[in-house]
Picture 1 (cartoon, one colour):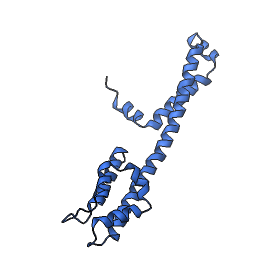
Picture 2 (picture 1 turned 135 degrees about the vertical axis):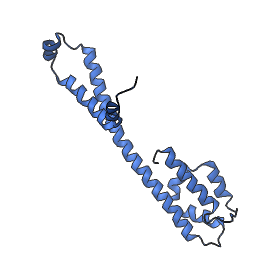
Picture 3 (picture 1 turned 45 degrees about the vertical axis):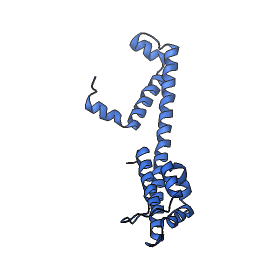
Picture 4 (picture 1 turned 90 degrees about the vertical axis):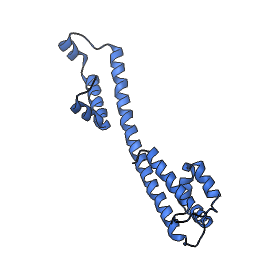
Length: 161
C-alpha cells in the first residue's frame, strides 16, 4: 500500500515523527478518564495506559538516540577531515626523491595516525609493512594511496557521503 507522498515526506524527518509520537502519547496520558467516559462512554483500560506510557518512553529514547547519533556523525566527519589533512601533510613532507618507506615513517609518526589505525583494512597494513614498492607516474606513494582508499571506505560505511 502506497503512502500519500505528503504524509511520506512529513514522516521522513525523524524529529517530526518522534515529536508527533511524543505529543500524541502525552495527550493520551494527560487526558483524565472522565473525558473518555464522557466522549466514548468508556474508560481506557489500565493495560492500554501502560502501553501508551511505554510508547511515550520509547519516543523519548528515540529522540535521545538521534541526538547522540548526530554528535557521532559530526565526530566522524571531523575525523575524516583530520585524516585527509594528515595524508596531505605527509605528502608535503615527503620529497619527490624519497621512497615509500619514508612516507610510511612520516605517517606513523603523525599524531592523527593512531586514531585512524583501528579503522584501517588488512590490505593497508600489509601495504604499510611492504612500503618498499615504487610507483611510476604517481605523486602519491602506495601506502598513502591505500590510506586514502580506507578513508573513502570509512566515509561511505559511515554514511557521510
